[in-house]
Length: 148
Image (cartoon, rainbow, N blue to C red):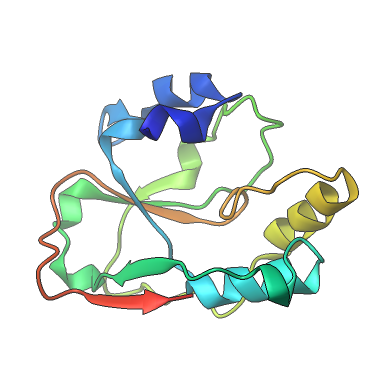
């Protein structure tokens, strides 16, 4: 099932993450932005209509519970044009003291949603947003679950 979400971009599964020295699929992908902001941007750009919103559940994970040397912040600063030749400088070990949840959808992500709407394609929800990568297990018992 996990391979299905990479259809048409299978080579992304072979991308190595610097600092953690592992593959893209060896880590958990966490978002530094509340999913409701993504949903709202999808609606604002016309990629999603109110009538089409279906429940979608997300776990709330406190950054303090992550092992620092197993956590990366990925800035995602440039559009690779689906080549996924990411800049090594976009990766840094996660700084728990400086971390703040993003207050808004980045302009690049918003523009990407508009491009996908114009092309009549289904957008990737976090294609142009920063990511937090975690190489490890997260205990799910007791985590808050939210709907976007």
